[in-house]
Amino acid sequence: MTMGTDKDMAAFTALTDPSVYVVTAAADGQRAGCLVGFASQCSLEPVRFAVWLSKANHTYRLARKARTLAVHLLPRHRHDLAERFGSLCSDRTDKFSDLDWHEGPDGAVILSDALAWFVGTVHDRFDGGDHVAFLLDPVAAHAPAGPDEQQAPPLSLDDAGDITAGHPA
Picture (cartoon, rainbow, N blue to C red):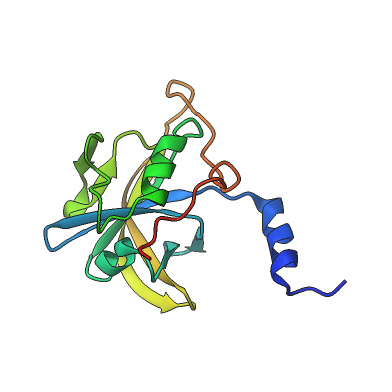
């Protein structure tokens, strides 16, 4: 079997079924957010996390100006939020209208219905082709503390597989 084809990589990544994230950015009096399938902690000391934003995405253009980004895990039952942030265009729609959110550090946009979230200062950016990695230094975070807080599983890439990206044409 020859590796390296798109079909082979799709089969490989299907085995992992990673979480998806909503990444929000705020800069110049604007806010934007998008659904992200490429993200991971990438360093232990110091703790760092990378999120990859599509260059075709309005959130990417705003994130280039932002000093911080907020990264949210969604509970599995909030497919509606994933669809909102994955299928609508921020440059045409206010994705935050009618949503419960608040400001975090440095004006970051925090979604109240997230399972967990963190805000990270943009440490660096790396071009990876059609996506750019934003390397983040976490400055604030919230996650369920234990059995007293409801712990739903996070929404996964497979759960969100029916969402068609809402990039501008």
